[in-house]
Image: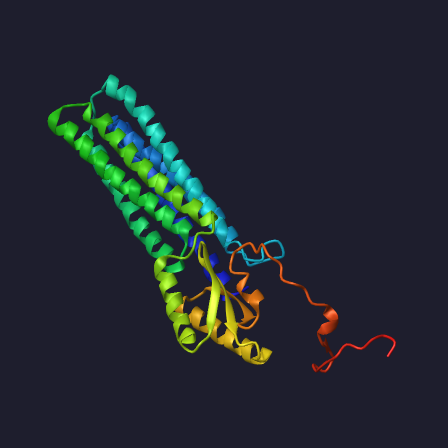
Amino acid sequence: MTSNTTNRSSLTRFAWLSIAAAITTIALKASAYLLTGSVGLLSDALESIVNLVGALMALAILTIAARPADEEHDFGHSKAEYFSSGVEGTLILLAAASIIVTAIPRLIAPKPLEQVGLGLGVSVVASLVNLFVAQVLLRAGKQYHSITLEADARHLMTDVWTSVGVLAGVGAVALTGWVRLDPIVACLVAVNIVWSGVSIVRKSVLGLMDTALPIEDQKKLEKALEPYTQRGVQYHALRTRESAARKFVSLHVLVPGLWTVQRGHRLLENIEADIRDALPGVTVFTHLESLNDPASWDDTSLDRTETPLRESPEKYPQQSSDGDAHPRKNEGS
């Protein structure tokens, strides 16, 4: 197992932290709802259940994503993280719908709140737990380039802001006596949750569609290649994609046709090393082409439509066991 795989496996500890936080906040927020009867606090508790489901999903996906490449998955399993964030985003949208369904009857037929002070105190404790865990997950997500941890963190932060809104609504009811403020705030919370859910789902879909690297990374890539272009080396068919924590770059490098294979190979090794220095952890694919061959300029598109004229294999030298090339001999000679 590589060190990178070992690092990815260690990320499951953050998922376990998220699971523990979700269970704790569910218990606290459910108690706050039972004490007050606030539909806003109930909506907060419902979202914490979604947090738990998302955390369990994150645990499963992080375990899968940490697996090394195998015969069926040559590029590894990191892309599995997009499924976790996509599912979590969908669950957020379902939570928003359930909040609205719960709030509307209370808006039509409002009920007075009870033991508001104690209920608010319990909810504040739950919010502080979520805030702490969200910050831990967000730092880990950025450090390890994990969209799963980042989505889980942003979901928890949404929960924190939701709790702030609910607390404001319940406090306003206690101060004004206008009971309908509670379900109104719950509906506003649901709208905020919808925005967060859509954002997470969108990011997951873009990842599954092999979106190019961010502009900042592309600028670093161009800067790494600039010294070579200044010395007359050309390149084209530059393509990038991001797969959760992994980044991929491929390009064709064009050199004079009279160069030896050894010289061209050494150039590609240097180019790949400089790209990896600019973008740590990136996987680089290079393809060497001749500046003097017209066919080198016909393969810049992803799907090559024109096939160059093929030459007979008889024209190429045969490689001997000692590494020296010699012309292929006819069987009768």
